[in-house]
Image (cartoon, rainbow, N blue to C red; front, side):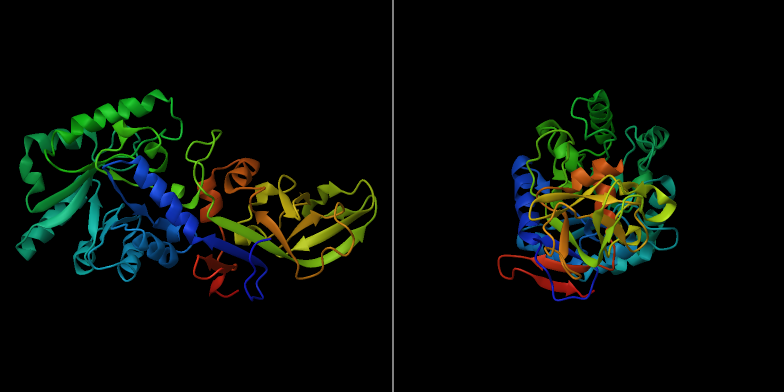
Length: 379
């Protein structure tokens, strides 16, 4: 069973910080001479920025990434002042000064961001550090080919900008054999010629496992830190860092023909014992898991029945001995028998979405060698 915090919450999310550290060590080892950063956007993929950041700092991590400026400002209060924090989206218009005030390094993605950062450097009378992202084919963020051509003809574009990193992002890194990976790498190498001597970064979580040709100087793992398989369908070398258990709210026996849940989509074929669990789509247990996932008690797989509702879901516990569960008992949902990747496949999505949707109503326990279960967020 998942370690249970002293809580009234309907579900308990346990994060194994030692597993996070072990995953970081593996990624750093795979990267060889490359520096290994930690991507902590979306509250460390839903697992808690403060706790995960402290674990990574203890493991020697000195470079971090967030998506938004407010995330980076929060992170600055957590990690050492000497740590580098990159803001992947760069500053929103008019907010470049906040990056300077909080010692953050923006990732500049378009000519307008370059211009604002350049103007701020001019007004301050000093060069300002930044990373430059180039778009190598994903058409999401970064300088487009036309921007790069203009930069090549007008180096003044970078006046006052201390370029510390040039980076791009792969669209298909989770598919090791996809030809677009090599195509993007070739485009990245061509773009790097405009930034001689500047460290480079291309590898997200999945690309770390593509080999040294993709590592360059800095790795940017995110979801891999938490144990999600970087290449679904292949053996996972990482350790799952998260487990989830939901509490039983009510138990009942139903007869043949009785329905369970909204829409009358589940009709009992015979007498069944149903446990109602205190977790639903408001907690990130996706509605698409209706009738497609399992809970586990004593290693026994128990099917979900009926439609996942906002705060509850039904579980057929007929396979357990009577009396094994009672209101307040816990049922494992993310565990050794059912990983984040398993649940993602059941829901028709990816592990990223499963993790980042995990709700704020959970009690959160952070497990380390020093303390088996610490309740960081009471339910």
